[in-house]
Image 1 (cartoon, helix red, strand yellow):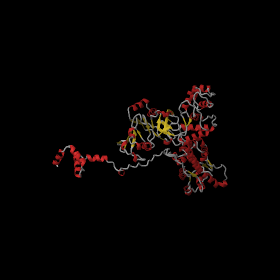
Image 2: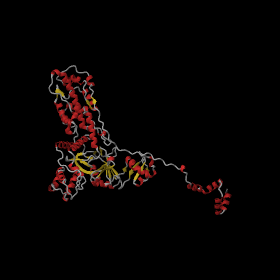
Image 3: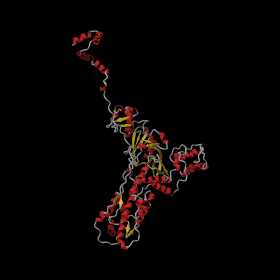
Image 4: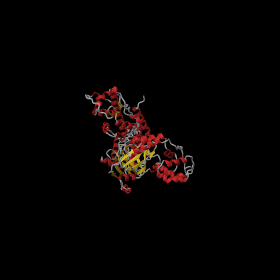
Length: 620
C-alpha cells in the first residue's frame, strides 16, 4: 500500500488529472480516492444533484386556525316559579285545644285553608316559606281575625316599590276586607291563612330583589362577573315577625350608599318633570364665527345643566349672548368649560356629542337609565367602601373616592366593542413599575399568530420574549408556529422600554379576566370623546396620580420608583375597585350625568327584566 502510494505521488499532477478525465474510475479506485481526499468528491457531487420532484420533502401542513372568541351575551332565562308546598303543615299534628285569643291556636285551626291553595314563588322563596312555618306555627301578619298593623305597613312598602325602581305588580297582595260574618268563620280562617302565606311570599320577593336585584347579572353575558349575594330568607321572616318597624327593615335591604340615594332623588325628579322643553337639532355642527338658531338653546342648556360654580363664572357672557345666533369668539371658553363639565373633549365645537350631553335624551330614556343604574347597584356591596376606585366604562372615567369625595378623576380608555371590558369588582393588590407586558393568549392566537405564520422572527424583532412552560427562553424564529392553530404552548411578554404597551406602571387587582389599570404610550386617544380602543384593560390618563392615590404617597415617590427600574409594590390598604357599567351616574354632588350605551348592555338588561316580568305576571 505504501509503495503504491509513493508511486502514485511520483506521477505529475497533470498526468493524474488527464487519466481521471479519459478513463472510467473503477469502484476500488473510487473508494481509494474517497479515503485519500476525505470524501470531498462525493460531497460535491451530492450538493450538485437536485432530487427528483417526487423525492422532495413535502412541507408540513399548517393546522387549521382557531380564533379565541370573546365572551357572548345570553338569552336571559329567569327561574321558573314553583308551587309552594304546604304538605308539611297540612300533615303535621294540630293542636287539639283552641283558644280564639291565641294567634297560634287560630293558625292551627286555619291551616286546612291551605289545602288546594296554588301559591307560586321562586324556588328559594318557596323553600323559605316551608322552612319558616314548619318551625313557627304562628301568624306574622294576622292578629285576631284581621290583618294587623305590621301587615298594613308591609303592604304600603310593597305598593311603593316603584320609588326604588321596582315593579309594584310583582308584590301585589289581596288584603282581606275588615268586615266578615261569624257564620262564615271557616271561610274567614282560610282567607287569613292564605293572606299570611301570600304576603310572606311577596315580602320575601321584595327583600331579595332589594338586596341583590331582580336580574342575576351572570346570566346576562360572559362579561358580567359578580359573586353571589346571599340573603337568608327564612331569617328575614323571623326578623319581620319580631320587628317593630317593618318599613325600616325592608327599606334597609336596598343599597345604603350615597350614589343609590342620589339616583333615587333623580328618579323622583324625572318622573315629576315635564318632557324636554328645549329641543336641539341632534345634527348641529357649529364652529366659532358661524351662526345658528340653535345657539340660544344650547346656551340656555349650559346654564341649566351645569352647577352653581359654572353659572357663577360664566353668567355674564351667557346673559349677554342669550338671544344671539352668532357663535362669537368670546363664547369659546364657555363652550369648552361646558364640554369639560360633561367629560367631553373641550374642542369648542358644538356638535352632536355636545348636543346629546346637554339636550339629553327623552324623559323616558333618562328614567330607564336611572332605573338600570339602581338595578346594577344592587349587584354590588351595599356599602361601596372608602377609599375605593370606581371605573365607569360608559363615561370613560376612573375616580379615586375617599370619605364620599372624589379626590382624583381622570379619563380612561376601555375595551373596544370586540374586546369589551368586563363588569365586576375586585380589590387592588399591587403596583408594577416599568412592567413587562404578558401578552394574553387571545392576542397571541388572534393577532400575533397570523404574522408568525408569515414571519417566525416577528416577535424577536418587535421586542418580545418567548418562553416555554418551564420558563426557558426560546427564539421566536426557532419555533414552527404553523403547527399551532389555537392553543399556543408558549408565553410571550414584551420587554421593558418606551415601546411597551403598559408604559410606566400597571395597577393590579388579579382576576380571571386579566384586566388591570395601566399607563400607555398612546396618549392621543385620551382626547377622543368615545374612548373604547383597548383589548379590555383600562388605560389611565394619569397613571402616576392613581398610583400615588392608592399608595397614599406623593407623586415624587411614584416618580422615584419609576426611575429606579423594574419593581413591584404591594398595596397595604383595603381598596376595592369597581370596573363598572352605568349609563346614568351621579357625581359627588348628586348631579346625574347620562352616557352612551357603548356596549349595548342597557338593551340586554331590559330584555332580562322583560323576561322576568313575563314569568312573574304571565299574560292571561
